[in-house]
Length: 334
Image 1 (cartoon, helix red, strand yellow):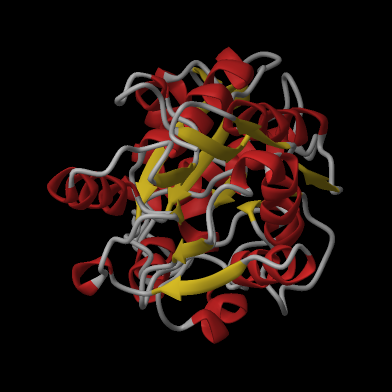
Image 2 (tube, rainbow, N blue to C red):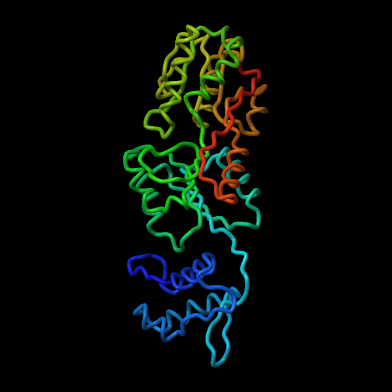
């Protein structure tokens, strides 16, 4: 019933307690069932008696087990265990907060959530996963990496697929049935631009600001090129705004939040009018963008729905792929 990993960063007494909790969840032991004595478990696992006692004490404090003098330890009562959920964000941002808040709200008291941030660094994600202090029922991961994408399947392979949930996009090479709540990046940008094709027609050039060495999916570029070629828009990719010369008649599609404010500053210096001389479209709707100038046009995933879909996948044990709706908010910047 109980196995101890001598190489785990999780303390052995916690491993003992977690293994018993898992056995109760799986109905291996039920209400009133006796547990091994401290001496027996210490002998079976080849660990110190104090370690077993500390694990049992933890479970008693949580009222999961009880003891009876002369009789030993028993499963105390039917437990409604909260799902232990670990959420791994590639970075902190306004729209990731929307996802997280919606996930937490939908899960409510059914789950406890621990949040981790790995800064789009595959090595940092690996380290976090290897050094978790406890096992989780679900590992919710935004798999966006600046480098080392080819290692992603290997890094994620330490997670049982029945406990894995990917947000935003799939990872090639991960085997098994697990839920994915994702965006269709190529189709989404194509459909979004097509929906505002008429106001875009007043611009002679469309430019996608796609930062060099970023973690954004290349499928966005593919969808952008497809739209521009199909509707005969002159178009360019901008990897770095620092050297960009702002010219009248250009509409910029901007991905990064920092680049948005850099772009607005450059346009202001030129004295150009946004929405007439220069167009600006920003990825990812946030509450602030409707108040910037007279409003910034956004194309965006429904992040609230992404969080709710993720929570539903966890609560209902789904293993399906769910694509989140993408929408356009047309404002004065185009």
